[in-house]
Length: 278
Ligand code: C2E
Ligand code: CA
Ligand code: CA
Ligand code: CA
Image (tube, rainbow, N blue to C red):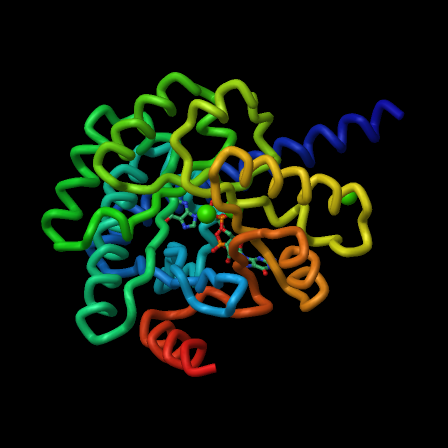
């Protein structure tokens, strides 16, 4: 028994060393990622219940020449811990805003672009000034930008979240709560948040329509949001059955592989044209 414990311990520390070596490697490589054009955005369509593309979510990708394609689930936390997310996040917002302006200039109907905001960006004291200056610079109407903040980050400091949301709202910029249902929302704060949309986390969508509890939770979220005057979007919609259930419950929008994976900007143009035709 003693020996086994000893071996487990050694295995564990080796794993930990490998993990921190990789983290260090990524943090170093990330410093050059922007200047070497290794970062790019994909866009995933967000669809209304009548089948129109009402917006897209910008999702960050990192293609490293040696390390290959690195998942945001792996490198975003590294960028957060090393502070690089501030610069990267600003690049994401500017690139997404420019892209939407370019789509509209090329004749696509107006839609929204959603960008993900990290905890560190959210805590920046000049966040709202930064966002408005990017909108000025890109000439994108503020009402077309949507900022996604996770429920966990919003509820970690609800007073700060209220202040940021109020300022964004004054500037006609929309804010959505991402991964809703996973972050211990206090309803007392939620009612004071100037939130445009709740994004129902994909963990609640996955087992619909089989899982009775998930169905009850999703229904409750949709009803609560609608009573509070908020839109809802279901994330991770993969099947026609999930879509049918969400439609029946009055969910306003859907996003997921059933419609499209995140795709490059050129393909969004085609996707929007096709979906408007039908
Ligand atoms: P998220 O914001 O919750 O984004 C949704 C994730 O679900 C995306 O993963 C998307 O590709 C994936 N997804 C969409 N539809 C489906 C579906 O039908 N089925 C399944 N299984 N998955 C689906 P992705 O692109 O790998 O991003 C992972 C996370 O990385 C994001 O989760 C977000 O937290 C973070 N992230 C991505 N881009 C950015 C960024 O620009 N800034 C920040 N701060 N975080 C980002
Ligand atoms: Ca998101
Ligand atoms: Ca999400
Ligand atoms: Ca369940």
